[in-house]
Image 1: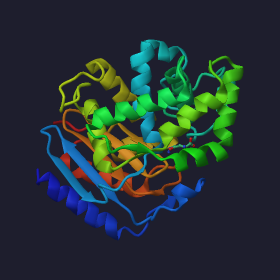
Image 2 (image 1 turned 135 degrees about the horizontal axis):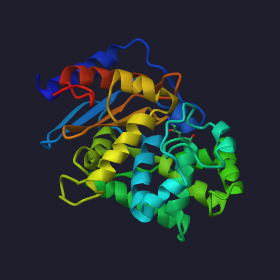
Image 3 (image 1 turned 45 degrees about the vertical axis):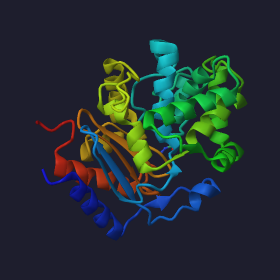
Length: 310
Ligand code: DON
């Protein structure tokens, strides 16, 4: 295989020229203000080498990518009881859809659609104050990445809260079914702040390393989750990480991955690499247009698709 740094540089050069960059999310002003020409990629290989290109050091709003970290923490707190309140099936609907909740009695299809992540936030809140749950998420992500220079963008969190009518509807609806145990505004406070985490591609790829390494943080050697839990989180990322675009993403890229409306994607090549890409323009399903293309190019050149024979 060609040198990874060369592959990553080639991909960034190709993306810089890409004519169709998708559409930047503008449901809140701070996301709408991001320059659509941005593109970053970070690949951290299992041997610890780090390969960066483009805007890999530029922090961006990770949005729904953070649902992976929230889920990991909730599984640590509640164990498999999480699955009594959240399903493990792809939804085939948009990330913020409410349609299935009525027929399915307030149990969200999976932890990566908004409804599922709101239930996860309810679990994380537990008996604590929202500020404590938010601080725990931030501490966790900093520890995973091994960096303290990771923050929650309060402007983004406030804008989410001011405009999050659908999320409020989802939360109230689930509360009516008894699947939210705490005050809706307190739960959403946790959810909106989790979405507002700002990280660079490099930091995101660092934070995702436990998922390529059987649940262990390779820098510390500490177990973050059990090997079985890591592979199950990866399974959910593969089947549900891109909402109603998950099948298409598996077809094109073939890696467990989680996207966010900020244009970031965290992807995992188990045993091989933790990868983060960022380009703010989104496709029709709300997933990064160039981020997906970049990952498609990466697996073509590395053979890292989980469906590829070694
Ligand atoms: O809750 C929302 O609608 C946003 N803060 C996050 C959604 C998101 O990133 C969905 N991903 N594509």
